[in-house]
Image 1 (cartoon, one colour):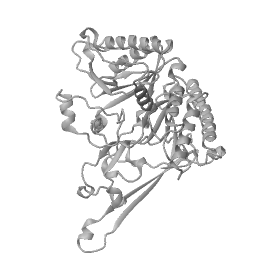
Image 2 (tube, helix red, strand yellow; image 1 turned 60 degrees about the vertical axis):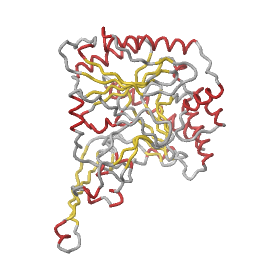
Image 3 (tube, one colour; image 1 turned 90 degrees about the horizontal axis):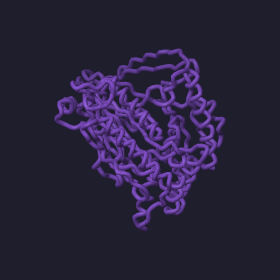
Image 4 (cartoon, one colour; image 1 turned 180 degrees about the vertical axis):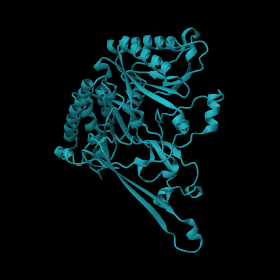
Length: 460
């Protein structure tokens, strides 16, 4: 796909295959190719690519080129799927979170992605309404003080701070704001338990921690609609879903909640999410729905894996984030100082981002199911080189940080080679009319300009 002008795009389709029968008879292999060009005329809104942060005007003239591979929908693991629906197996997690502390650890994998389209998910982030309790500025300052003013790519500031506090046997000073946040979260937890399990009395078991511990693990609970306190619940319902969530809440670290289901009617899900939003608002929190398709796209079938990371995952076909290239071939210490400066600029006003995900190494490895040579040569497979087909593993978590704006409209991913600026596709289309939608897009545009300016200052 390539965007050529504002009025549409052109799509090139090529079908390559090898005539095996010709090669078997001793003749050279012949490649037959069919090429079709389609012109699609419609209005699209361009997403520009910043080639050089020192020249912001360049963003108005350069297009971002994206590559997508389209293929037949991969089949899920049917045996495992049947066992889960029959109640023999538990619902496996499909979200690559939380990241492992040590490189190479495999204790917290997420095999749920193998169920493919049979699994549906919503990712929610819970933060206090009070901006002071959401800000991570002081967390970063304490972390940089402990690390000597610089920070390696993807290093979790909460984990560093926890380790430093454990060494010194100290805790962060508490205040009325943090204590009030914990009390409101406790009330929210009790209300959510009552909503999900009613008189059965099941508990989520979330620990409330203030001052010295930030490391979270993944917990989960099964919710049966027949036990819920929603308008559509009834005693004979067979619908159910799974809740995955953080094992503890320690502000100002955001709380992550994942709603995952296979067999649940939309009317029950709408009633549950509506009730959840009301409970969150009553207890003075904000519920941000994060875009899974942008942050954690599902792995593509292994027969299309290559050295191009962009096409190894099922990404949105017509969406590309804004990209800012960072200086390459930098000394390690200089890069660490640049990371510290970038994060400081983004966490402060007027950007006001906060940390969402961090990992200092490639994590959540996925291995190819079988070797490429054992596969049938499907149309399009022969167009990739042998070395590309021998790409036997990919990683769902890349080295770096993911940050979120205070209202959830934008997200930022900081990698070693570039910065990605995302519009939250779950937030902007939620507007009920065109006026609100345009207001949301305008706020994103203003934030992008401020973000670009602050990033330029940090890189200089």
